[in-house]
Amino acid sequence: SAAPSPAESMPPDASIADLPPQDIEAERAILRACISDSEAVRRAGAILTSASFYRLAHATIFAGMQRVAKSGESLDAITLRNELTRVGRLNEVTDTLAEIVGSQMSAANVEAHARIVRSAFVRRQILGVSQRLRESAFDQAEDLDATIRRDVDALLALLGVGRGFALVTAQELMFEWG
Image (cartoon, rainbow, N blue to C red):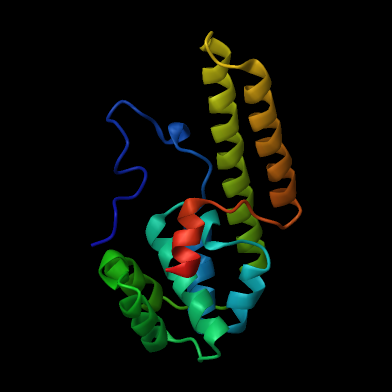
């Protein structure tokens, strides 16, 4: 079964405005485009990585799509399912995969959708850096020089994300090499 959506896992007193930047429909559109046109995997992959996806199931599926495409196999529902089974991830994404496969669409706008997802990813990264800065500002025991260096490095890495490069996270490594 798929993980609950971010809105489903929010506290009862939280609002949709409290969610980090994301566009679940754009993520789904990218996955549907890729399953209907294997060239779309390359086009979307030129703009974002699996770590760019907000929903873990979407990231897992996209990483599987990229591995199938890199292997030279033709991407379709069966080759993707086999790849996700091979890496032990199919059970985590079965419901989401069924939804994606059951509602294929054109790949014509995959780059536009990928830019939307990448933008939301960068905004989530900015929120993470700003949260660390805020916490560090209140921590009297923290070494300010080390904090500034760490967070400036993180912000410089975000500049790279905005130019089409991506931060490499532990989550991304898990998907890319899984």
